[in-house]
Image (cartoon, rainbow, N blue to C red):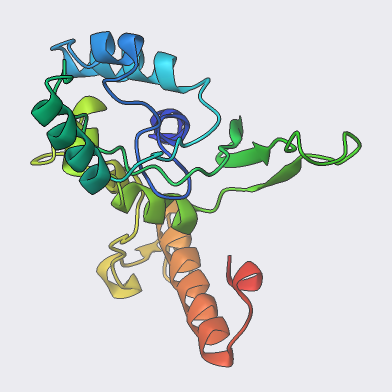
Length: 212
């Protein structure tokens, strides 16, 4: 499946706002996004971003930067064009670890707090990752090596699984009395039962951790 690539994307973007953790102001990142081959560009961006543990927030808004640029232009002090605002949120990023088909995030303690405080470790749910991936903008998708016409990051997570009704797969007759089903038919039946169970829990108003 795509679990390995999903993990890498989680390490490249902010798990709160979906913004790419670095931009062209970082020299290594600027070199990485110049790579033309999408697969090589993705791996290069991942290698640069995976150690970034905070989504840097802007010290000035884009409007304030533009005003500062105009003032410096009048005084003849400007040397470079204004840099577009990153739009970061300032949140700390987790260390993502894979355990089978699950991804776990560990948020390390803040230096402002007691050294004895334990880091927070929790499961990154598919719905949480899907929500983050949907917030990745078109420019960041391209930098990550995705072609939006054919592949968005959130498309790597299955949200709809077509399951045929049981009559589509008839049982096989062994003799005059005995009939049998193949393994796939049993699995499809399990999916239908699980969907019915989820629907019942949602109608009963069960908490999210029970539904998951």
